[in-house]
Image 1: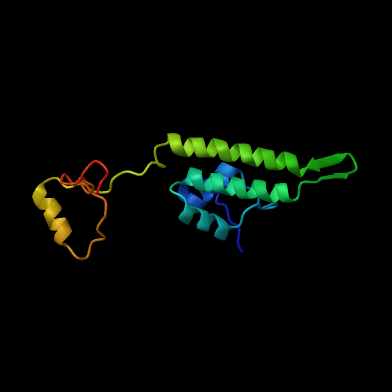
Image 2 (image 1 turned 180 degrees about the horizontal axis):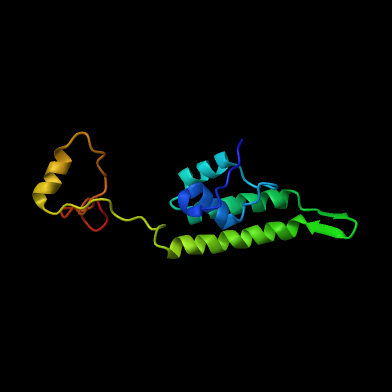
Length: 144
């Protein structure tokens, strides 16, 4: 497992996720590069990937929900879990409001000829959803 951060989130989605979850200290890494790479494959944008990372981190802290004290220093893992869960909610809201989490059509036919040419192309992955797919004007109200 590896951990790298360039300190420039604009250079890679992985570094952007690290920045958003503030996993930027190489002395105490939280999430490995390979885990972030997987989260980026599973999510539609960096905000959702970062939110998923925060949720995983929160779950890790919840599982360890104890408090530790050494001298005058104490830490509560339950508090850390709550903090990461709250950050996940904020990141999900950012991902939704940025518009990048909303699916948009990739292509629409400009004309009937273009549509027919696309349907005739065997190399394309044809979508099984189309306007009028449920039209059955001869059927009764119950569909039968």
